[in-house]
Image 1 (tube, one colour):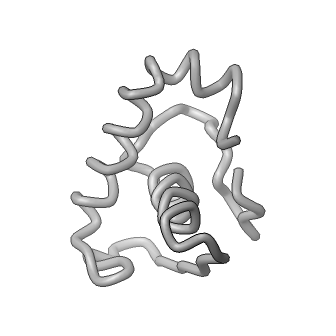
Image 2 (spheres, one colour; image 1 turned 45 degrees about the horizontal axis):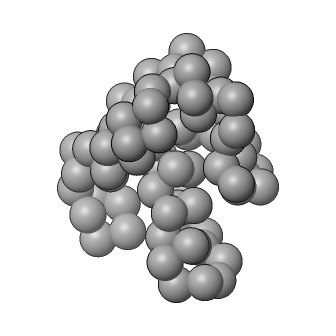
Length: 79
């Protein structure tokens, strides 16, 4: 997923984990601006990229849901 330096895999498939939800968010943002996006976060961060972390998780959750769930996402990944 998105050339992340650490994390970013779908292990556990838990969108509350930043390595999953922030990576999806960064990928979506990169598609929107048509360029690279670099984000970092640490345990306990409440704001990422100027957004509440809960909003980042919801954006990722909606993306996965629109794809048809984690099973469909796992078939194709971020392409």
